[in-house]
Amino acid sequence: MADKKFNPLPGFGLTMGYTLLYLSVLVLLPLAGLFLKAFQISWADFWALITDARSLAAFKLTLGASLLAASVNAVFGALLAWVLVRYQFFGKRIIDALVDFPFALPTAVAGLTLCSLFAPNGWLGRYLVPLGIKATYTPLAIVIALTFVGLPFVVRTLQPVLQNLEQEIEEAAATLGASRLRTFVQILAPTLFPTVLTGFALAFARAVGEYGSVTFVSGNLPYKTEIVPSLIVYQLEEHNIAAATAIAAVLMVISFTILGLINWLEGRVGRFNE
Amino acid sequence: MAGAVKSNLTSGRTAYRRGTEEPPFIKWTLIVVALAFALLFLLVPLANVFYEALGRGFGFYLRALTEPDTRSAIRLTLLIAAISVPLNLVFGLAAAWAIAKFEFRGKAMLITLIDLPFAVSPVVSGLVFVLLFGLQGYFGAWLDEHDIQIIFAVPGMVLATTFVTFPFVARELIPVMRETGSEQEQAALTLGASGWQTFWHVTLPSVKWGLLYGVILCNARAMGEYGAVYVVSAHIMGRTETMSLRVASLYEDPQGGPAAFALASLLALLALVTLGLKTFVEWKTQRNYDLAQQSGAEARPETGRAPA
Image 1: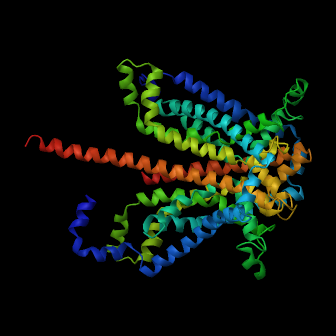
Image 2: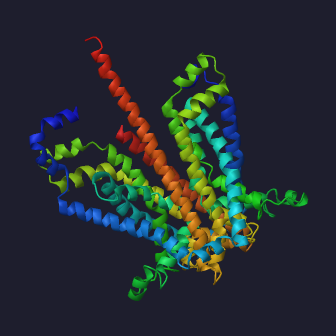
Image 3: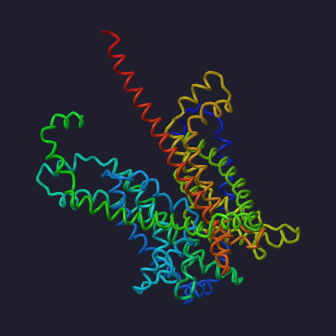
């Protein structure tokens, strides 16, 4: 309906045409190429490639570590967002600006610094290794790296929602005699939960595809600390194009499913806020 | 309204405070736990990079950075960013203009498609170009016949970087352009400006901060990308190594650790500059918004006073 309205601005054909052309050539065609290649593999071969013991181990590790990292971020990210929005304290602006640091820091640098931090003579490793906590070349190292790269998502998703939250509702609850704990459990938690879930999903999606930081700290040991992106790189370097393609296609389907879920969640949150 | 109600209740202020705030003990526990998390995951890694980089003295640091293969990695990184950022800048402007200023069917779908590269693993972003232009890829045989090398060479690295940084500018610009509306452009056109004049003198100045924000983020990712570039690069020292790749290859070298940190500190510095610029742009936009609010608030009482 709206597109029939008269719009005097020029350039729609030009900009729209360029957008579609650039998008198709740079993004859609290459992605379609991957799926086309995956469809050329026979179903039996495809199934064999992705259910191979090494692939299954990598998928389990990737999804498990990402889930754990996103959960840690959901809890501590929500806490950090709450503290940054509701309280005043020294250094608040610096911490607030630093939340985006994992976004801005190249993943190779993140991997490098985490590796040196948790090495036996590193800043943190010298205390942890004597306790028997080995955070390099173990699944724990992967969870730590994924927590680092996913940290901004929950904080940045939750912050604006917290800022716009009307405190009148909390005041009303307090006036009606609710304790602070009850206000939190019955009013704040249900209101904020969908947003935290969106942040969680964003952090999870980022973690599933992450490669750079993990490859430094994990050691890429097959069956033990090899994540899916590392396995794709390995198969590609061994010239097993079919295996790399099949695994990548599955990884992409997982990523797109999470993306769809996030869009659905955001739509719901948007409706709720209106 | 709410403000007026609150100021009427100043006598009950302490009670109201107690109702919507946590007891001090809980408040400070939350702050300490949140800060400990931020310290551990943000400040410690940041400090560690610079500590390790400068640990062997400034002379070593400079020598590590001016080593020929490292210098050529820095040059290649700058070259790749200098190609892919402007490409995505032009695309971002075109896409934002079409999406923010016009109504059409399938707009939500188009926005989702533009965001697609964010959902793809960096490794897969590289792999798709190997499948297109690699020796066993769709165009591999043809490229080989004509002696054109894309994969394991600079063009492939540029393509992969452009793919990975594709959404940044468009994503930041679309909401900003939508918010400014199109009344000003329509006024300019009515007054006889051409389409290009309107774009240069009306649209561009009104979205410049959003544009800068998008370009900063795009550039940071373009210079720091690892996974996608790793897959399409042959890791040839001095030829197809970017800064991130050079950090990795130095680190794998038993003697290269400190040099890896020296180069990594440059990338960390880039991240800090990015954060600084980002904070500045946010502050600037907020201030412009506040000034606009203020002048609006000042204008109203004056018009109210005028008849009296």
